Image (cartoon, rainbow, N blue to C red; front, side):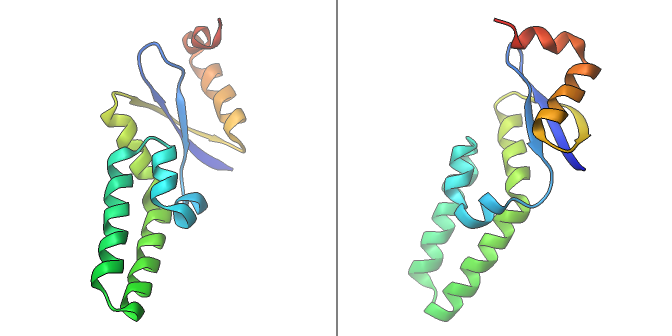
Length: 120
């Protein structure tokens, strides 16, 4: 079972963010953050990567870049949540489910008033 956090913004459907390590953030770093609309962390991560490559000696740069990749994998979803909060989303619930769809169904069962946001 996985833990999902549900974030809500007025007049928008809820956004679910899975908790835990993100393979996508680990492998793709700033690109993954940008795809999840975490613009500020994406720019900062890209700037950190460029600075590491420009200023560090090659063996040290490799270690530092690997460290940045691990850090992004561990904190990528938290950075996504932070970006949602900056855009005005409010953390509603933590939902335990096997998949994102199951988490959404559980959320809609708990909060029937959210169902109208999915209707045309």
